[in-house]
Image 1: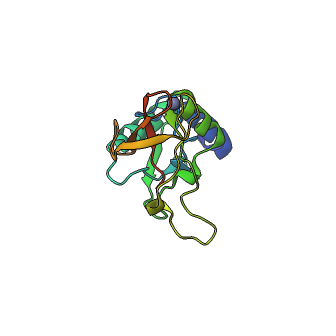
Image 2 (image 1 turned 120 degrees about the horizontal axis):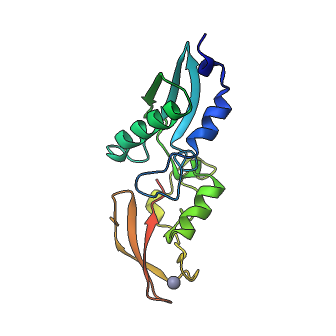
Image 3 (image 1 turned 135 degrees about the horizontal axis):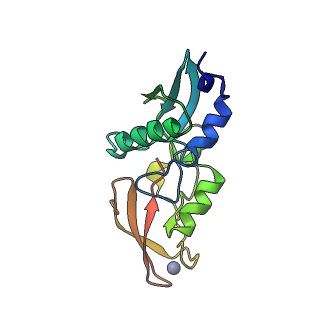
Length: 168
Ligand SMILES: [Zn+2]
């Protein structure tokens, strides 16, 4: 019996908290809600991830970082499985993740992507508070910011531009 295979999944999850999101290094893949689960298949550690955005090229990098990090903790056999349904939603982001986003100058999702009735509110257009000064007087500059996962906004109060992590 491989020693690593007796490690609880919750411990593996804690190790994964050191794996940063390639696009937003202050945010771990756990806080981002990308890691959906950890399980053991015999002596292979199976990590299930759900991409934040279909075709996000960062996912390959994340899978590689997960394998490397777990190898550093003595887990030699790792399988990263991608699950596309249900689709990732910004609702899966942890409170710590939202706080880290703001500290990084990125506005966290303003509202839950799915309301209680289960209807996506994506089309409604959220009120986005400026991460620099907190003002709600912001406007969308471009639907695509530094990456396709983000939109570019500008604050009318402090005039600073900022990225908004799109709710989807
Ligand atoms: Zn501002």
